[in-house]
Amino acid sequence: MRSLQFIISRSSAIAALAFALLVWATAASGQTIAIVTPETNRIAERTADGLSNELAKTSDVLDLSLSRSAFDALSITTPFNMTARQSSVAATAVGCDYLIIIRAATMRRTALERPEYYESFASVFVISQKLGNLIDWSNSAFNGASIKESEDTLIGSMPKLAANIRAAIAAAGLAPAKQASAEIEEMPADGTPGALNFRSPIPYLRIKPEYTAIASFYDVAATVEIELTLASDGLILAAEVVRWAGFGLDGSALKAVRSMQWRPAERNGKTLPIRVLLRYNFKKLER
Image (tube, rainbow, N blue to C red; front, top):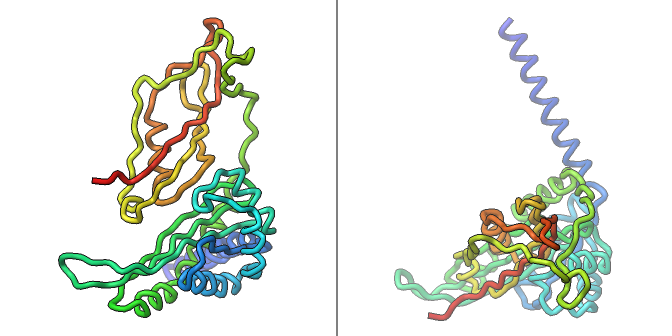
């Protein structure tokens, strides 16, 4: 009996694994990926080549030079800090379902506890064309006694990076579709009829998002924008990043916003639901 139970359990496990792989393959198949490197340098190009070769084993990856030409034609001034709309437009222009943007460099560093060394890093932003949202961000960094050592180690990590990106794309494909929200009023512009007798919502206590340690380490200056939907009683119905930055800054801004309590918007003394755009600027302070 125990043997039979073991066989049944093992068969069930194998079936479950096969089903999971089928779901993953279904979500990942048919998706076109493009990779661009807005800042051109040797390690950025090597990273793009290595990642492209790995992803091409299971996905349709567009030609790197053609993708970059299409992306560069848009003349985006902040390619590592785009709005959702910019991101969606960029991915559409390039002709992909998922756009991967790479920021990579090799830097000489010093530390008290060790002699001079080199760090090669690649920050990778994965964007969905459908919504323009950042579905995944990662930073791979490796040290070496020489430029070659640090860069070769970074390139050697591409199989793992590609696997993580495949998982992120599969998860995004399985995520439930965004529900169409009810018609909710936007904040009226000053001087317009909608602004007459209107009182804006305000937080009872403003909470400042944390500037993350990794953003500080790489001296990142960026803006995160959150679209906040408030109910007529001031409760938060939804909070969505509509301008991403990576480096943990998106999550930091969301955490701060979701922890606030709000006085609701009013018009003519009556509370109403409202959609508000919140903007947070992050920058390393010089000491």
